[in-house]
Image (cartoon, rainbow over all chains, first blue to last red; front, side, top):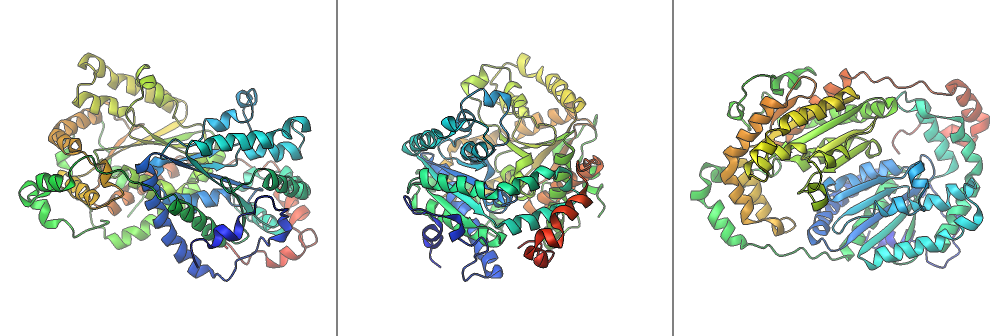
Length: 291
Length: 291
Protein backbone atom coordinates (compact mmCIF):
# COMPACT_ATOMS: atom_id res chain seq x y z
CA UNK A 1 0.00 0.00 0.00
CA UNK A 2 1.80 3.12 -1.17
CA UNK A 3 1.04 6.62 0.03
CA UNK A 4 -0.33 7.78 -3.31
CA UNK A 5 -2.83 4.95 -3.38
CA UNK A 6 -6.03 6.53 -2.09
CA UNK A 7 -5.21 9.97 -3.45
CA UNK A 8 -5.36 8.48 -6.92
CA UNK A 9 -8.19 6.08 -6.26
CA UNK A 10 -10.73 8.48 -4.80
CA UNK A 11 -9.91 11.81 -6.40
CA UNK A 12 -12.52 12.57 -9.00
CA UNK A 13 -10.72 13.39 -12.22
CA UNK A 14 -11.40 17.06 -13.02
CA UNK A 15 -13.54 17.38 -16.10
CA UNK A 16 -14.84 13.82 -15.85
CA UNK A 17 -18.52 13.04 -15.85
CA UNK A 18 -18.45 11.22 -12.51
CA UNK A 19 -21.63 9.65 -11.16
CA UNK A 20 -21.89 8.62 -7.53
CA UNK A 21 -23.52 5.30 -8.36
CA UNK A 22 -20.21 4.31 -9.99
CA UNK A 23 -18.64 3.99 -6.52
CA UNK A 24 -19.91 1.44 -4.01
CA UNK A 25 -20.27 3.07 -0.55
CA UNK A 26 -19.51 -0.35 0.96
CA UNK A 27 -16.17 -0.60 -0.86
CA UNK A 28 -13.22 -1.60 1.29
CA UNK A 29 -10.74 -2.80 -1.29
CA UNK A 30 -8.49 -5.57 -0.06
CA UNK A 31 -8.32 -4.19 3.46
CA UNK A 32 -9.33 -5.83 6.68
CA UNK A 33 -10.55 -3.92 9.66
CA UNK A 34 -7.92 -5.17 12.07
CA UNK A 35 -4.99 -4.19 9.84
CA UNK A 36 -6.65 -0.91 8.96
CA UNK A 37 -6.95 0.11 12.62
CA UNK A 38 -3.22 -0.44 13.08
CA UNK A 39 -2.46 1.51 9.94
CA UNK A 40 -4.71 4.35 11.14
CA UNK A 41 -2.72 4.49 14.38
CA UNK A 42 0.50 4.90 12.38
CA UNK A 43 -1.08 7.58 10.26
CA UNK A 44 -2.34 9.45 13.34
CA UNK A 45 1.21 9.72 14.63
CA UNK A 46 2.51 10.87 11.24
CA UNK A 47 -0.30 13.39 10.95
CA UNK A 48 0.41 14.85 14.36
CA UNK A 49 4.06 15.23 13.45
CA UNK A 50 3.32 16.82 10.08
CA UNK A 51 0.86 19.25 11.61
CA UNK A 52 3.54 20.33 14.05
CA UNK A 53 5.83 21.04 11.09
CA UNK A 54 3.13 23.00 9.25
CA UNK A 55 2.62 25.01 12.41
CA UNK A 56 6.36 25.60 12.78
CA UNK A 57 6.76 26.71 9.17
CA UNK A 58 3.87 29.13 9.54
CA UNK A 59 3.82 29.97 5.84
CA UNK A 60 1.05 27.82 4.45
CA UNK A 61 -2.17 26.33 5.76
CA UNK A 62 -4.46 23.38 5.18
CA UNK A 63 -8.22 23.50 4.73
CA UNK A 64 -10.15 20.23 5.03
CA UNK A 65 -13.78 20.30 3.92
CA UNK A 66 -16.06 17.51 5.14
CA UNK A 67 -19.38 17.01 3.40
CA UNK A 68 -21.90 14.22 3.42
CA UNK A 69 -25.54 13.48 4.00
CA UNK A 70 -26.92 13.13 7.52
CA UNK A 71 -25.15 10.35 9.50
CA UNK A 72 -22.40 10.05 6.88
CA UNK A 73 -19.77 10.30 9.62
CA UNK A 74 -18.40 13.84 9.56
CA UNK A 75 -18.19 14.07 13.36
CA UNK A 76 -16.59 10.64 13.46
CA UNK A 77 -13.83 11.71 11.09
CA UNK A 78 -13.11 14.78 13.19
CA UNK A 79 -12.89 12.70 16.34
CA UNK A 80 -10.94 9.75 15.00
CA UNK A 81 -8.77 11.32 12.29
CA UNK A 82 -8.36 15.00 13.08
CA UNK A 83 -8.07 14.25 16.80
CA UNK A 84 -4.45 13.29 16.18
CA UNK A 85 -3.47 16.89 15.54
CA UNK A 86 -2.49 19.36 18.22
CA UNK A 87 -5.59 21.42 19.00
CA UNK A 88 -3.41 24.51 19.34
CA UNK A 89 -2.90 24.69 15.57
CA UNK A 90 -6.17 23.18 14.55
CA UNK A 91 -9.46 24.99 14.05
CA UNK A 92 -12.81 23.23 13.64
CA UNK A 93 -15.68 25.20 12.13
CA UNK A 94 -19.19 23.75 12.31
CA UNK A 95 -21.41 25.34 9.71
CA UNK A 96 -24.99 24.98 10.81
CA UNK A 97 -28.17 26.70 9.72
CA UNK A 98 -27.11 30.33 9.12
CA UNK A 99 -28.06 32.91 11.74
CA UNK A 100 -30.05 35.99 10.72
CA UNK A 101 -26.82 37.99 10.84
CA UNK A 102 -25.09 35.49 8.58
CA UNK A 103 -28.02 35.46 6.18
CA UNK A 104 -27.83 39.25 6.00
CA UNK A 105 -24.38 38.85 4.37
CA UNK A 106 -23.33 37.01 1.25
CA UNK A 107 -22.92 33.26 1.70
CA UNK A 108 -19.11 33.36 1.90
CA UNK A 109 -18.99 35.97 4.66
CA UNK A 110 -19.19 33.52 7.53
CA UNK A 111 -16.87 31.12 5.71
CA UNK A 112 -14.15 33.71 5.22
CA UNK A 113 -14.04 34.25 8.98
CA UNK A 114 -13.18 30.58 9.53
CA UNK A 115 -10.41 30.12 6.99
CA UNK A 116 -7.11 28.87 8.43
CA UNK A 117 -4.36 31.29 9.42
CA UNK A 118 -0.83 30.58 8.21
CA UNK A 119 0.42 27.51 10.03
CA UNK A 120 -3.09 26.35 10.86
CA UNK A 121 -5.31 23.47 9.84
CA UNK A 122 -8.99 24.32 9.53
CA UNK A 123 -11.65 21.65 9.33
CA UNK A 124 -15.01 22.61 7.89
CA UNK A 125 -17.79 20.38 9.26
CA UNK A 126 -20.16 21.20 6.40
CA UNK A 127 -19.14 24.28 4.46
CA UNK A 128 -19.92 26.83 1.78
CA UNK A 129 -20.95 23.89 -0.39
CA UNK A 130 -24.23 23.66 1.53
CA UNK A 131 -25.13 26.85 -0.33
CA UNK A 132 -25.32 24.87 -3.57
CA UNK A 133 -26.61 21.67 -1.93
CA UNK A 134 -29.39 21.99 0.66
CA UNK A 135 -30.08 25.50 -0.63
CA UNK A 136 -30.56 24.16 -4.12
CA UNK A 137 -32.49 21.02 -3.19
CA UNK A 138 -34.92 23.01 -1.05
CA UNK A 139 -35.07 26.08 -3.31
CA UNK A 140 -34.03 28.35 -0.47
CA UNK A 141 -32.84 30.95 -2.97
CA UNK A 142 -33.74 31.31 -6.67
CA UNK A 143 -31.72 29.35 -9.22
CA UNK A 144 -30.42 32.64 -10.60
CA UNK A 145 -28.65 33.13 -7.26
CA UNK A 146 -27.30 29.66 -6.48
CA UNK A 147 -26.22 28.94 -10.02
CA UNK A 148 -23.68 31.79 -9.85
CA UNK A 149 -22.18 30.37 -6.68
CA UNK A 150 -20.08 27.67 -8.34
CA UNK A 151 -17.89 30.30 -9.97
CA UNK A 152 -17.90 32.38 -6.80
CA UNK A 153 -16.71 29.36 -4.83
CA UNK A 154 -13.98 28.68 -7.39
CA UNK A 155 -12.78 32.27 -7.22
CA UNK A 156 -12.84 32.17 -3.43
CA UNK A 157 -10.89 28.92 -3.25
CA UNK A 158 -8.44 30.14 -5.91
CA UNK A 159 -7.62 33.15 -3.79
CA UNK A 160 -7.04 30.98 -0.73
CA UNK A 161 -4.78 28.70 -2.76
CA UNK A 162 -2.80 31.62 -4.17
CA UNK A 163 -2.27 32.79 -0.62
CA UNK A 164 -0.82 29.52 0.58
CA UNK A 165 -3.81 27.41 1.61
CA UNK A 166 -3.97 23.79 0.49
CA UNK A 167 -7.51 22.50 0.14
CA UNK A 168 -8.84 18.94 0.44
CA UNK A 169 -12.54 18.26 0.04
CA UNK A 170 -14.09 14.99 1.16
CA UNK A 171 -17.53 13.66 0.37
CA UNK A 172 -18.42 10.84 2.76
CA UNK A 173 -20.37 8.49 0.56
CA UNK A 174 -22.83 6.27 2.42
CA UNK A 175 -25.64 4.17 1.05
CA UNK A 176 -29.26 4.93 1.73
CA UNK A 177 -29.52 1.62 3.62
CA UNK A 178 -26.54 2.43 5.81
CA UNK A 179 -28.05 5.79 6.69
CA UNK A 180 -31.23 4.03 7.77
CA UNK A 181 -29.21 1.63 9.93
CA UNK A 182 -27.45 4.56 11.60
CA UNK A 183 -30.78 6.30 12.17
CA UNK A 184 -32.00 3.11 13.83
CA UNK A 185 -29.00 3.09 16.14
CA UNK A 186 -29.95 6.63 17.14
CA UNK A 187 -33.43 5.42 18.05
CA UNK A 188 -31.85 2.99 20.46
CA UNK A 189 -29.60 5.62 22.06
CA UNK A 190 -31.30 7.76 24.74
CA UNK A 191 -28.51 10.33 24.39
CA UNK A 192 -29.28 10.89 20.74
CA UNK A 193 -32.87 10.01 20.03
CA UNK A 194 -34.26 13.28 21.40
CA UNK A 195 -33.27 15.06 18.21
CA UNK A 196 -34.80 12.61 15.78
CA UNK A 197 -37.53 14.15 13.70
CA UNK A 198 -39.80 13.02 10.94
CA UNK A 199 -37.97 15.52 8.74
CA UNK A 200 -34.81 13.39 8.92
CA UNK A 201 -36.71 10.60 7.21
CA UNK A 202 -38.59 12.88 4.83
CA UNK A 203 -35.22 14.21 3.68
CA UNK A 204 -34.42 10.70 2.45
CA UNK A 205 -37.00 11.18 -0.28
CA UNK A 206 -34.67 13.77 -1.77
CA UNK A 207 -31.69 11.41 -1.74
CA UNK A 208 -31.31 11.43 -5.53
CA UNK A 209 -31.70 15.22 -5.67
CA UNK A 210 -28.80 15.53 -3.24
CA UNK A 211 -26.63 13.14 -5.21
CA UNK A 212 -27.33 15.14 -8.36
CA UNK A 213 -26.47 18.38 -6.57
CA UNK A 214 -23.23 16.80 -5.35
CA UNK A 215 -22.40 15.56 -8.85
CA UNK A 216 -22.73 19.12 -10.11
CA UNK A 217 -20.39 20.30 -7.38
CA UNK A 218 -17.84 17.67 -8.41
CA UNK A 219 -18.20 18.73 -12.03
CA UNK A 220 -17.95 22.45 -11.43
CA UNK A 221 -15.77 22.98 -8.33
CA UNK A 222 -13.07 20.34 -8.59
CA UNK A 223 -9.47 20.80 -9.66
CA UNK A 224 -6.07 19.34 -8.91
CA UNK A 225 -5.45 22.27 -6.57
CA UNK A 226 -8.75 21.97 -4.70
CA UNK A 227 -9.67 18.33 -5.26
CA UNK A 228 -12.84 16.50 -4.29
CA UNK A 229 -12.42 13.00 -2.94
CA UNK A 230 -15.39 10.67 -2.76
CA UNK A 231 -14.80 8.31 0.15
CA UNK A 232 -16.72 5.05 0.48
CA UNK A 233 -18.03 5.49 4.02
CA UNK A 234 -20.35 2.62 4.90
CA UNK A 235 -17.40 1.11 6.79
CA UNK A 236 -16.22 3.65 9.31
CA UNK A 237 -12.76 2.15 9.58
CA UNK A 238 -12.26 2.22 5.83
CA UNK A 239 -13.44 5.83 5.69
CA UNK A 240 -10.95 6.81 8.42
CA UNK A 241 -8.13 4.89 6.72
CA UNK A 242 -8.71 6.50 3.33
CA UNK A 243 -9.02 10.04 4.68
CA UNK A 244 -5.99 9.67 6.96
CA UNK A 245 -3.89 8.43 4.05
CA UNK A 246 -4.95 11.27 1.80
CA UNK A 247 -4.28 13.94 4.41
CA UNK A 248 -0.88 12.50 5.34
CA UNK A 249 0.09 12.06 1.71
CA UNK A 250 -0.86 15.67 0.96
CA UNK A 251 1.04 17.01 3.94
CA UNK A 252 4.15 14.97 3.05
CA UNK A 253 4.11 16.51 -0.41
CA UNK A 254 3.90 19.99 1.07
CA UNK A 255 7.50 19.47 2.28
CA UNK A 256 7.33 21.75 5.28
CA UNK A 257 10.44 23.73 6.10
CA UNK A 258 10.78 23.91 9.85
CA UNK A 259 12.65 27.10 10.72
CA UNK A 260 16.12 26.87 12.18
CA UNK A 261 16.32 27.46 15.91
CA UNK A 262 17.15 31.07 16.65
CA UNK A 263 19.54 29.90 19.34
CA UNK A 264 22.61 27.67 19.33
CA UNK A 265 21.14 24.35 20.48
CA UNK A 266 24.54 23.01 21.56
CA UNK A 267 25.09 26.09 23.67
CA UNK A 268 21.64 25.83 25.25
CA UNK A 269 22.40 22.22 26.03
CA UNK A 270 25.72 23.08 27.63
CA UNK A 271 24.38 26.08 29.47
CA UNK A 272 21.19 24.63 30.92
CA UNK A 273 21.29 20.86 30.58
CA UNK A 274 24.82 19.99 31.66
CA UNK A 275 25.24 17.79 34.74
CA UNK A 276 26.17 20.79 36.86
CA UNK A 277 23.26 22.93 35.68
CA UNK A 278 20.74 20.17 35.95
CA UNK A 279 21.74 18.56 39.22
CA UNK A 280 19.72 15.58 40.27
CA UNK A 281 17.32 15.72 37.36
CA UNK A 282 20.13 14.82 34.99
CA UNK A 283 20.50 11.40 36.48
CA UNK A 284 16.91 10.61 35.66
CA UNK A 285 16.78 12.12 32.19
CA UNK A 286 16.34 9.87 29.18
CA UNK A 287 14.71 7.14 31.20
CA UNK A 288 11.19 8.18 30.43
CA UNK A 289 9.52 9.21 27.23
CA UNK A 290 5.82 9.41 27.96
CA UNK A 291 5.50 9.21 31.70
CA UNK B 1 -11.58 4.37 43.72
CA UNK B 2 -14.78 6.35 44.02
CA UNK B 3 -15.83 9.16 41.75
CA UNK B 4 -15.50 11.85 44.40
CA UNK B 5 -11.93 10.87 45.13
CA UNK B 6 -9.87 13.36 43.14
CA UNK B 7 -12.46 16.11 43.42
CA UNK B 8 -11.88 16.10 47.15
CA UNK B 9 -8.18 15.40 47.04
CA UNK B 10 -7.09 18.16 44.66
CA UNK B 11 -9.63 20.91 45.19
CA UNK B 12 -8.00 23.67 47.18
CA UNK B 13 -10.25 24.43 50.14
CA UNK B 14 -11.61 27.96 49.67
CA UNK B 15 -10.20 30.29 52.28
CA UNK B 16 -7.26 28.02 53.06
CA UNK B 17 -3.71 29.27 52.96
CA UNK B 18 -2.55 26.71 50.40
CA UNK B 19 1.09 26.65 49.32
CA UNK B 20 2.16 24.81 46.19
CA UNK B 21 5.17 23.24 47.90
CA UNK B 22 2.70 21.27 50.03
CA UNK B 23 1.82 19.12 47.02
CA UNK B 24 4.44 16.93 45.31
CA UNK B 25 4.21 17.33 41.51
CA UNK B 26 5.43 13.74 41.23
CA UNK B 27 2.54 12.40 43.33
CA UNK B 28 0.71 9.42 41.90
CA UNK B 29 -1.03 8.02 44.94
CA UNK B 30 -1.47 4.26 44.84
CA UNK B 31 -2.01 4.16 41.11
CA UNK B 32 -0.03 2.34 38.49
CA UNK B 33 0.32 3.56 34.96
CA UNK B 34 -1.08 0.46 33.32
CA UNK B 35 -4.29 0.46 35.37
CA UNK B 36 -4.60 4.21 35.02
CA UNK B 37 -4.53 4.02 31.23
CA UNK B 38 -7.41 1.54 31.29
CA UNK B 39 -9.34 3.73 33.69
CA UNK B 40 -8.72 6.76 31.46
CA UNK B 41 -10.22 4.84 28.53
CA UNK B 42 -13.37 4.15 30.58
CA UNK B 43 -13.57 7.78 31.59
CA UNK B 44 -13.16 8.94 27.99
CA UNK B 45 -16.22 6.94 27.01
CA UNK B 46 -18.23 8.28 29.94
CA UNK B 47 -17.12 11.83 29.18
CA UNK B 48 -18.18 11.54 25.55
CA UNK B 49 -21.57 10.28 26.62
CA UNK B 50 -22.04 13.00 29.23
CA UNK B 51 -21.05 15.71 26.80
CA UNK B 52 -23.68 14.45 24.40
CA UNK B 53 -26.26 14.78 27.17
CA UNK B 54 -25.10 18.31 28.05
CA UNK B 55 -25.41 19.18 24.38
CA UNK B 56 -28.86 17.63 24.19
CA UNK B 57 -30.09 19.45 27.27
CA UNK B 58 -28.81 22.76 25.90
CA UNK B 59 -29.53 24.62 29.13
CA UNK B 60 -26.18 24.75 30.87
CA UNK B 61 -22.55 24.77 29.82
CA UNK B 62 -19.15 23.76 31.08
CA UNK B 63 -16.03 25.90 31.12
CA UNK B 64 -12.69 24.18 31.72
CA UNK B 65 -9.71 26.43 32.41
CA UNK B 66 -6.22 24.97 31.94
CA UNK B 67 -3.30 26.81 33.43
CA UNK B 68 0.30 25.85 34.08
CA UNK B 69 3.84 26.92 33.45
CA UNK B 70 5.51 26.24 30.12
CA UNK B 71 5.57 22.48 29.28
CA UNK B 72 3.14 21.65 32.09
CA UNK B 73 1.02 19.65 29.65
CA UNK B 74 -1.96 21.81 28.71
CA UNK B 75 -1.91 20.70 25.07
CA UNK B 76 -1.53 17.10 26.21
CA UNK B 77 -4.66 17.30 28.36
CA UNK B 78 -6.65 18.74 25.47
CA UNK B 79 -5.50 15.97 23.18
CA UNK B 80 -5.81 13.02 25.56
CA UNK B 81 -8.71 14.03 27.79
CA UNK B 82 -10.86 16.54 25.92
CA UNK B 83 -10.38 14.62 22.67
CA UNK B 84 -13.05 12.20 23.88
CA UNK B 85 -15.78 14.80 23.43
CA UNK B 86 -17.65 15.43 20.21
CA UNK B 87 -15.96 18.41 18.55
CA UNK B 88 -19.34 19.67 17.44
CA UNK B 89 -20.23 20.75 20.99
CA UNK B 90 -16.74 21.53 22.15
CA UNK B 91 -14.89 24.79 21.74
CA UNK B 92 -11.17 25.23 22.39
CA UNK B 93 -9.86 28.74 22.94
CA UNK B 94 -6.09 29.30 22.93
CA UNK B 95 -5.23 32.53 24.67
CA UNK B 96 -1.88 33.72 23.42
CA UNK B 97 -0.14 37.07 23.62
CA UNK B 98 -2.94 39.61 23.14
CA UNK B 99 -3.21 41.35 19.78
CA UNK B 100 -3.17 45.17 19.58
CA UNK B 101 -6.96 45.07 19.13
CA UNK B 102 -7.37 42.88 22.21
CA UNK B 103 -5.06 45.14 24.22
CA UNK B 104 -7.17 48.11 23.22
CA UNK B 105 -10.05 46.55 25.19
CA UNK B 106 -10.28 45.53 28.81
CA UNK B 107 -8.68 42.17 29.61
CA UNK B 108 -11.97 40.24 29.73
CA UNK B 109 -13.17 41.40 26.31
CA UNK B 110 -11.50 38.63 24.35
CA UNK B 111 -12.42 36.11 27.04
CA UNK B 112 -16.11 36.95 26.92
CA UNK B 113 -16.13 36.16 23.21
CA UNK B 114 -14.96 32.60 23.91
CA UNK B 115 -17.33 31.61 26.72
CA UNK B 116 -19.38 28.48 26.05
CA UNK B 117 -22.87 28.70 24.59
CA UNK B 118 -25.65 26.72 26.29
CA UNK B 119 -25.00 23.04 25.65
CA UNK B 120 -21.32 23.63 24.90
CA UNK B 121 -18.06 22.79 26.58
CA UNK B 122 -15.36 25.45 26.27
CA UNK B 123 -11.74 24.74 27.07
CA UNK B 124 -9.47 27.65 27.81
CA UNK B 125 -5.85 26.85 27.01
CA UNK B 126 -4.48 29.60 29.22
CA UNK B 127 -7.10 32.16 30.18
CA UNK B 128 -7.98 35.46 31.83
CA UNK B 129 -5.78 34.32 34.72
CA UNK B 130 -2.70 35.21 32.68
CA UNK B 131 -3.70 38.80 33.35
CA UNK B 132 -2.82 38.33 37.01
CA UNK B 133 0.05 35.91 36.36
CA UNK B 134 2.50 36.77 33.56
CA UNK B 135 1.19 40.33 33.60
CA UNK B 136 1.98 40.61 37.29
CA UNK B 137 5.30 38.76 37.22
CA UNK B 138 6.55 40.93 34.34
CA UNK B 139 4.94 44.17 35.51
CA UNK B 140 3.13 44.57 32.20
CA UNK B 141 0.57 46.83 33.85
CA UNK B 142 0.82 48.74 37.14
CA UNK B 143 -0.13 46.96 40.34
CA UNK B 144 -3.03 49.38 40.75
CA UNK B 145 -4.50 47.81 37.60
CA UNK B 146 -3.82 44.09 38.07
CA UNK B 147 -4.70 44.08 41.74
CA UNK B 148 -8.30 45.02 40.90
CA UNK B 149 -8.59 42.11 38.49
CA UNK B 150 -9.16 39.41 41.11
CA UNK B 151 -12.51 40.92 42.01
CA UNK B 152 -13.28 41.58 38.36
CA UNK B 153 -12.59 37.94 37.58
CA UNK B 154 -14.80 36.80 40.44
CA UNK B 155 -17.64 39.02 39.25
CA UNK B 156 -17.20 37.78 35.69
CA UNK B 157 -17.21 34.12 36.74
CA UNK B 158 -20.17 34.69 39.07
CA UNK B 159 -22.20 36.02 36.20
CA UNK B 160 -21.32 33.03 34.05
CA UNK B 161 -22.28 30.68 36.88
CA UNK B 162 -25.59 32.47 37.47
CA UNK B 163 -26.33 32.02 33.80
CA UNK B 164 -25.81 28.27 33.83
CA UNK B 165 -22.08 27.78 33.25
CA UNK B 166 -20.20 25.32 35.44
CA UNK B 167 -16.54 26.19 35.86
CA UNK B 168 -13.57 23.93 36.57
CA UNK B 169 -10.08 25.39 36.83
CA UNK B 170 -7.00 23.20 36.68
CA UNK B 171 -3.44 24.13 37.54
CA UNK B 172 -1.03 21.57 36.08
CA UNK B 173 1.63 21.38 38.73
CA UNK B 174 5.04 20.25 37.45
CA UNK B 175 8.39 20.43 39.17
CA UNK B 176 11.16 22.66 37.95
CA UNK B 177 13.23 19.56 37.20
CA UNK B 178 10.45 17.99 35.14
CA UNK B 179 10.13 21.18 33.10
CA UNK B 180 13.84 21.03 32.36
CA UNK B 181 13.51 17.40 31.26
CA UNK B 182 10.69 18.33 28.92
CA UNK B 183 12.69 21.23 27.53
CA UNK B 184 15.52 18.78 26.87
CA UNK B 185 13.17 16.50 24.97
CA UNK B 186 12.26 19.51 22.81
CA UNK B 187 15.93 20.04 22.04
CA UNK B 188 16.04 16.51 20.65
CA UNK B 189 12.93 16.97 18.52
CA UNK B 190 13.52 18.71 15.16
CA UNK B 191 9.80 19.48 14.91
CA UNK B 192 9.83 21.46 18.12
CA UNK B 193 13.30 22.80 18.74
CA UNK B 194 12.95 25.69 16.29
CA UNK B 195 10.92 27.61 18.83
CA UNK B 196 13.26 27.21 21.78
CA UNK B 197 14.62 30.49 23.00
CA UNK B 198 16.91 31.62 25.74
CA UNK B 199 13.89 33.38 27.21
CA UNK B 200 12.26 30.00 28.00
CA UNK B 201 15.15 29.28 30.32
CA UNK B 202 15.39 32.81 31.68
CA UNK B 203 11.74 32.54 32.65
CA UNK B 204 12.71 29.71 35.00
CA UNK B 205 14.45 32.26 37.19
CA UNK B 206 10.99 33.62 37.98
CA UNK B 207 9.66 30.20 38.98
CA UNK B 208 8.97 31.22 42.57
CA UNK B 209 7.36 34.49 41.47
CA UNK B 210 4.95 32.51 39.34
CA UNK B 211 4.12 30.11 42.16
CA UNK B 212 3.42 33.06 44.44
CA UNK B 213 1.21 34.66 41.80
CA UNK B 214 -0.68 31.36 41.43
CA UNK B 215 -1.07 31.03 45.18
CA UNK B 216 -2.70 34.46 45.26
CA UNK B 217 -5.06 33.35 42.50
CA UNK B 218 -6.00 30.28 44.53
CA UNK B 219 -6.54 32.45 47.59
CA UNK B 220 -8.61 35.12 45.86
CA UNK B 221 -10.45 33.45 42.96
CA UNK B 222 -11.44 30.05 44.29
CA UNK B 223 -14.87 28.91 45.47
CA UNK B 224 -16.96 25.78 45.53
CA UNK B 225 -18.79 27.07 42.47
CA UNK B 226 -15.63 27.93 40.48
CA UNK B 227 -13.05 25.66 42.09
CA UNK B 228 -9.33 25.49 41.46
CA UNK B 229 -7.78 22.04 41.33
CA UNK B 230 -4.04 21.64 41.64
CA UNK B 231 -3.08 18.53 39.69
CA UNK B 232 0.25 16.78 40.23
CA UNK B 233 1.47 16.69 36.63
CA UNK B 234 4.98 15.29 36.50
CA UNK B 235 3.39 11.99 35.46
CA UNK B 236 1.32 12.63 32.37
CA UNK B 237 -0.86 9.56 32.91
CA UNK B 238 -1.67 10.56 36.48
CA UNK B 239 -2.50 14.09 35.37
CA UNK B 240 -4.88 12.74 32.69
CA UNK B 241 -6.47 10.32 35.15
CA UNK B 242 -7.11 12.97 37.79
CA UNK B 243 -8.50 15.54 35.36
CA UNK B 244 -10.71 12.99 33.61
CA UNK B 245 -12.14 11.85 36.94
CA UNK B 246 -12.87 15.38 38.07
CA UNK B 247 -14.57 16.34 34.81
CA UNK B 248 -16.68 13.17 34.70
CA UNK B 249 -17.61 13.48 38.35
CA UNK B 250 -18.69 17.08 37.84
CA UNK B 251 -20.75 16.24 34.77
CA UNK B 252 -22.44 13.32 36.53
CA UNK B 253 -23.50 15.66 39.31
CA UNK B 254 -24.95 18.10 36.79
CA UNK B 255 -27.67 15.46 36.13
CA UNK B 256 -28.42 16.42 32.56
CA UNK B 257 -32.02 16.18 31.43
CA UNK B 258 -32.07 14.97 27.86
CA UNK B 259 -35.22 16.31 26.21
CA UNK B 260 -37.94 13.90 25.19
CA UNK B 261 -38.06 13.11 21.50
CA UNK B 262 -40.55 15.34 19.71
CA UNK B 263 -41.77 12.33 17.78
CA UNK B 264 -43.24 9.00 18.76
CA UNK B 265 -40.19 6.72 18.61
CA UNK B 266 -42.33 3.59 18.31
CA UNK B 267 -44.17 5.11 15.40
CA UNK B 268 -40.95 6.15 13.68
CA UNK B 269 -39.70 2.62 14.16
CA UNK B 270 -42.83 1.12 12.67
CA UNK B 271 -43.04 3.59 9.85
CA UNK B 272 -39.44 3.62 8.66
CA UNK B 273 -37.65 0.66 10.19
CA UNK B 274 -40.14 -2.16 9.76
CA UNK B 275 -39.07 -5.09 7.59
CA UNK B 276 -41.21 -3.83 4.73
CA UNK B 277 -39.90 -0.28 4.90
CA UNK B 278 -36.33 -1.30 5.31
CA UNK B 279 -36.11 -4.18 2.87
CA UNK B 280 -32.76 -5.84 2.61
CA UNK B 281 -31.03 -3.58 5.09
CA UNK B 282 -33.17 -5.00 7.88
CA UNK B 283 -31.56 -8.37 7.60
CA UNK B 284 -28.17 -6.88 8.32
CA UNK B 285 -29.16 -4.50 11.07
CA UNK B 286 -27.97 -5.07 14.59
CA UNK B 287 -25.00 -7.10 13.45
CA UNK B 288 -22.57 -4.24 13.55
CA UNK B 289 -21.97 -1.54 16.08
CA UNK B 290 -18.84 0.24 14.99
CA UNK B 291 -18.10 -0.95 11.48
